[in-house]
Amino acid sequence: MPKILIIDDDTYVCKQLHDLFAARDYETRVSHTANHGLKVLRTEGADMVFCDNRLPDADGEELYRRLRRFHPVIPVVFMTAYADVRTAVNLIRAGAADYVVKPLVSDEVLRLVEKAMGKLEAGGREVFFKQYVEGKSDPMINALNHVRVVAPTDLSVLIMGETGSGKEVVARAIHYQSKRRDNPFVALDCGALPGELANSELFGHVKGAFTGAIHDKRGCFEEAAGGTLFLDEVGNLSHENQVKLLRTLQEKTITRLGDNKPIKVDVRIIAATNEDLSSNLRNKAFREDLYHRLNGFTIHIPPLRKRKEDVFDLVWHFIGRASKEFGKEVSDLEPEVKKAFLSYNWPGNIRELENVVTRCVLLTRGSRIDESTLPEEIRFFQPGSEIHNPNQHQSNKVQSLKQVAMKAEREAILAALLTTGNNRSEAARLLRVDRKTLYNKMKEYSIRFNT
Image 1 (spheres, rainbow, N blue to C red):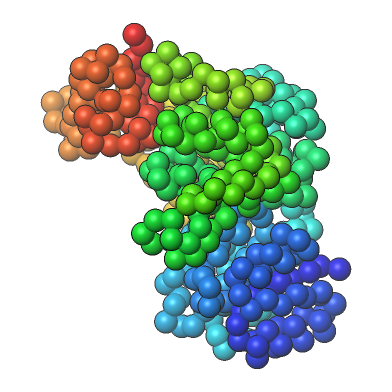
Image 2: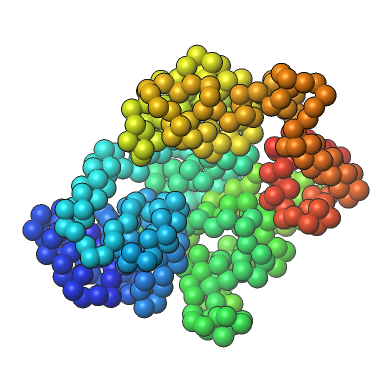
């Protein structure tokens, strides 16, 4: 019997939904706060969540962020007042299933439930991972063979691959094929957090630990208890947090920021990086002992340009998903679009491909995607050139503002790398960007700067 979790501090709404679902043989659980709802979800599970956008202890954005850490694929529908619709739309963009406006209309609620349950019955998370990750190219088959070998073990795994190549999806595939599959999968992007915030996100904090710490907070290690913690862009952790992470892996305990009480943790670590950590070992930017702790087993994810045999399998998958989302019947590509997809080098990898296909489906009026829906950088791409001018076919002298800016950025990055002796951290500081932005720009401009 499908189970639906209702989180709302309005007892009338809770009873309304409970009666509606019970009449159709859905099992329900009711919570009146975010913390209690998350506890129920962790301990009892659910197939779907209906949640108010404003709760006594959290708003919708905070709740959804916490929920996704340990239950990344469950459908979540937010209930909101008319004045908060914009916030609800932002949550949809972040991955929530849908939203409904109060007062609730029973037929609309049931339509959303049937839609979500239909997706689950169609195959759920396993089908998603199979379609998104697998391919027929030799590099990807080799990587997936490694996934199947290491998943049943408890070894730590280091996934290496370019930005957008699917490292987190592979990490989830490992988790869902492991003995920890029924426990949380928690993902943390280390590249997006400054050092002090990463400390709190990883290990938690107690009330009063720093300005703004108005209540105790569980960190990712506690949220992932019994499951898997995925540390994306682990090379961006500060030296202090590297030391704390190493100690945690050795002793299997954490200490919250502002506290000295050790807390036992049982978590499998999967780390990922888009850079060569071995070069960071040489310049002391990453601890060698931590590297060996994380690198129990290495999986290399090939960039999309090296698995061109898989491009159209992914394209059909993304077309199907976008067509369903936009209510369209797109089913094919014009020959020039197929040629463009194969010749383009996809510096943003699968993530870029997904975004491009989604855009194309949105702009397509009939059943076939044509060249006019493609972004300029793909339509006018010239294989073998590093920076491409969309107006090249019109003039060899006139440059677009975009091309001028791209050239200037590339030259500034090369100058910074030369000045710092290829020290990426120092180069990022000189350029006044974070390291992740620098790495992404280097990938975009095909900069391979070796000492």
